[in-house]
Length: 315
Image 1 (cartoon, rainbow, N blue to C red):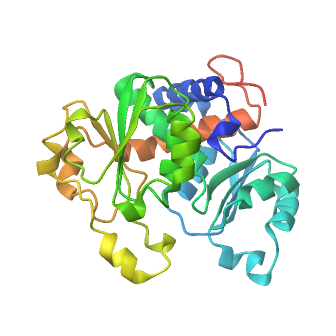
Image 2: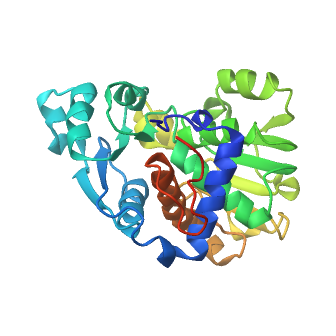
Image 3: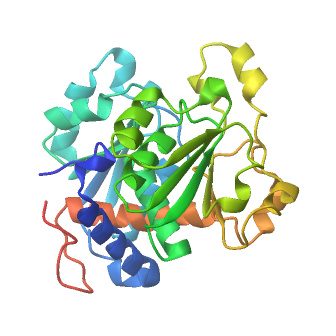
């Protein structure tokens, strides 16, 4: 039995095979309608979520399975003091696979240690968001046709953004990626990620303070919001929340082939006028999340692809 707690839990080859399956589901979703019939997903969300929770649930329903769980820790026994370890022990009797989101780093890993079923980390604090990383990778590959030889810019909150941290780690395993890190000093990528992922691998990267100076060279621009819930005081949040806003005027500086990604939700860091630009990929990105999570659920449950007669990879 395997879990997905961190993107590195899968090899790059396994990740690519998972994306291949997600692509097949994307192209013919009807063929996968009953693959997970009579299987149950436990949706354990201890903090608010729209896209991640609903896309997991949609993924399971699309596969013909069922969903049980809770949308907020306040309506679970966690409100009475029950530990994550005890919750997952009990849930293991009721479901075949679990997706857990928790505000504390390491909660998903602890759940996996006590679980009798596969556990998927749907986001743990500021640490990791591996399924978001998988759908980000899928979107980049579908948009560019490759995951090599790309210049990728990350803009906004690079300090607290778990989606940024996860995607940097995953792209660092691909060949020919140049990283452009765009943020104010207060929200720059943590030193440990630069040291352990970029410098340790001798990967090219630059840190800049303005978006405009690097837009012409980017193949991918990954925008993020400044997250109020990750700040210790309101004053710092108010001061930094409008630091970077992508407008139609700024987008004119970019390549016509560049794609704009965003894990969502956005606040005002991408102007509404950008939505109609063909380079805006963030709604497509959210849609891809359903197909990628369908592929992940199938693989962790050992369910065969009706198209190939095989699982994406052995678990």
